[in-house]
Amino acid sequence: MGSDSFINDVIWGLSDPQKHLPSKYFYDEKGSRIFQEIMQMDEYYLPACEREILYKQSQQIANEINHEEFDIIELGAGDGSKTMVFLEEVIKTGKKTTYVPMDISSDILEVNKRQIKQKLPDLTVETLPGDYFYTIKTINSYSRPRLVMFMGSNIGNFPGEKAIEFIRFVNDHLNPGDYFLMGVDLKKNPHVIRAAYNDKKGITKRFNLNLLERINRELKGDFNLKAFEHYGVYNPLEGAALSFLVSMQEQDVHIANHTFHFDKYETIHTEVSQKYSLKDLDQLAIKTGFSWDRHFTDSRGYYSLSLFRK
Ligand SMILES: C[S@@+](CC[C@H](N)C(=O)[O-])C[C@H]1O[C@@H](n2cnc3c(N)ncnc32)[C@H](O)[C@@H]1O
Image 1: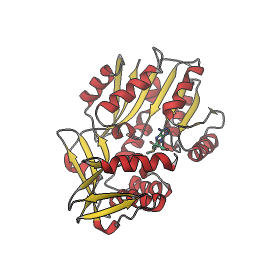
Image 2: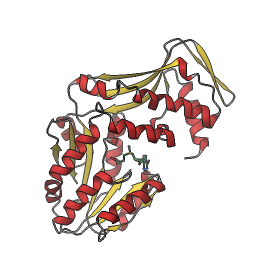
Image 3: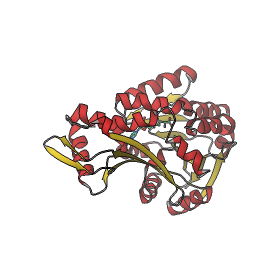
């Protein structure tokens, strides 16, 4: 990701009447480390739910795929540690597969391949570094039926219509009989959701503020970090958890010859985490061109691994 697009996105976002910054810029080295801490927080229930489903129901999910041979393509695979549980179960069923993890970070793909090969030495792993909006085009070179995976509730970061657009885009690259498996955070007690984005130790606050720190570091900005607060809120009407940074005083911020004025209590919108009900997901499957879907949920009903078939 070049710094040109970073500076352009920052100037564009802070020039809007409702200031905003793209959440993809959270994940520099420091941000990725803080995100690892978030994944360990008691309040942040999402990874534990996804792991529970994978441990208890991977076999059922694998059995739903009615092909004896198919390839598994994972978008934004990360280190693959959760997917490994699923891959093991697929292999146990005797079905033949190749695993193709795609990620924008080639470093994380190296970790992914090393870990998977250690545990499953006979599995063919073909890493594909790059932006999945481009690398997904290569899946046509796989002649067997495909299962495309999109885990970690990443779909939640696509607001409203953008989620539909993204799933349609995935569907466009599939053949009839292919599958799409997606990790989705479900609508639930709003207090539980709100707490996930407002932890008591202030880890989410550090994560959010690191975005301003990154702008200071990489773009020579002069954000006064002490003059901004983190604010996380969940709106049950929209099913959206939203994160903001709040300017606690009237102030000017300078970035690359631009001056941005902040009124007292003016906000920068930094992230959306959309939640879905199982009925919403059935609708989503229909709207995005899938003809069949099934949901695998954890014991608390907090989270779903939803399998769609084209
Ligand atoms: C929050 S992590 C989730 C990793 C893993 N799927 C999991 O559930 O643990 C998101 C991953 O997606 C990758 N990613 C984000 N945007 C991407 C894009 N446009 N193309 C490819 N990979 C992307 C990131 O590098 C990161 O490894």
